Image 1 (cartoon, rainbow, N blue to C red):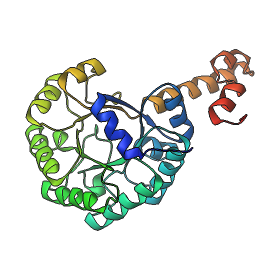
Image 2 (cartoon, helix red, strand yellow; image 1 turned 120 degrees about the horizontal axis):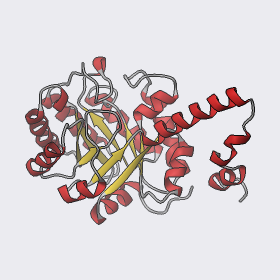
Image 3 (cartoon, one colour; image 1 turned 135 degrees about the horizontal axis):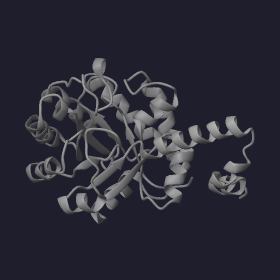
Length: 280
């Protein structure tokens, strides 16, 4: 789709207007639905991309596969896309290439995390390890130097809360901000009080993760707005809803041997074609 404004610049403009609600997409069609439903930006979920390939979110997919999906998503919507870039796919040199590749794909920015690649997993699972704050700082500096568009966002995620504790997450956030990160993402905080305290101690643009069935309690967008967070992420909500709906439909089809009872739950052919612009 034709874009007239830089997507990174548009996302930064949105940040100035107020809190951004960022649902996760796992392919271009789901991103188009997110846009259709009125959201102003979309997140390319690394877990969603990996799970869609039949894989756990443990860093199996290569950078090129992530970038390809990001390109499909960015081309399909007019709203800015923030892409999950896992650990940056290597050290500072690799991070440089990661930034350039995602810029070419047309996204507004990327998120990189401080997990060790060899033990990378969902941020809400035990057994994670993190690289040193200094090493992550070097990655962030490399990412900032590599971007050709000064508005391209670098979001730094720290998984330190579940490894070394809350205080280390705060310390790392300050290091990452000093290294040039535009937004700080503290993963897997465990209470509303922790989110409040983090916002008091880290005076930066902050992103909160509202994933389901994890270590973080459910907190409303209104509450995050009051705490001063800039972005609230819902990375797997759409994926989980879709998978459950498909499972229930398949069970009914197998049991009843007809899909007639499912028709009212389906997106119609006309609705799909309209979403895709097929009849234009």
